[in-house]
Each structure stands twice: as structure tokens, then as C-alpha cells.
Length: 129
Image 1: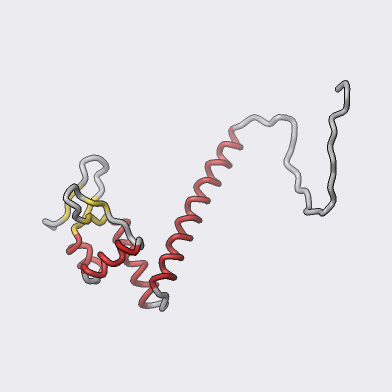
Image 2: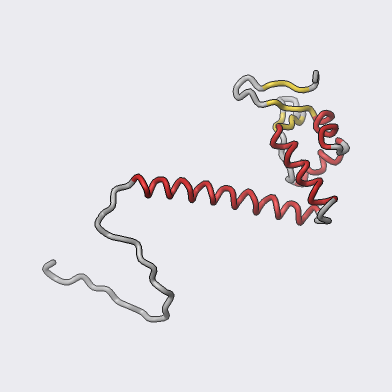
């Protein structure tokens, strides 16, 4: 395809809007609308032209599926996408924290479950210890 190019830095293929529209079966104006709404954010050239990555194409196909097959409106799709990204971010953070915990030495204590309680407990350090 003559309309795609490869970024020199990461070897990711990017597509101009006409090719992205063809790959997704959408009109280019629809892609522009989705960009304005924040549903998809393609890379921009220095001249302002949109360049769609394979990830963007995948997201556009997901938007199309949710809209056409599931009957979700665009506001709902935006919420689904935002929450899905948030879940992915939290899962990545959780994995990093678990890895960090597994690498850190134990300090003689252990984690225990403390059920919720309305009881107030005051802890005071014993003197001389």
C-alpha cells in the first residue's frame, strides 16, 4: 500500500485517514468525528494530518462493533473505552506492585486480614521499649 509508512523509530505502521477508513469500512468524516470526540486519537504529522496505527484501527473496529452489533451510543462507547483503559492501567500497576513486593525482603511481619469494625482502638508505645 502506497499510503502507509513505517515510523523509523519503532517500526509501527501508520495509515493515512483514507486507508484507515477503507480498512474499517467507515467514512473518513466518521473517523474525524471520533477523533474530535476523543474515541480514537491518531498520531499527527507536523502538518496536522492524521496517521492511524494498527491499535487505532483495532479501536475503530471495536467502536463499530459496539455501535452496530451491541447498539451502544457514542457516549456509552466512550465510557466503555475509558473504563477499559483504566482497568488495563490498574492491572499493569497491580502486576508491577506484586513484582516489587515479591522482590523485597520480608521484615518479620505478615499481612493479615482485619475485618471492618466500628470499634476505635488507640495504640500507645510502651515506655522503655
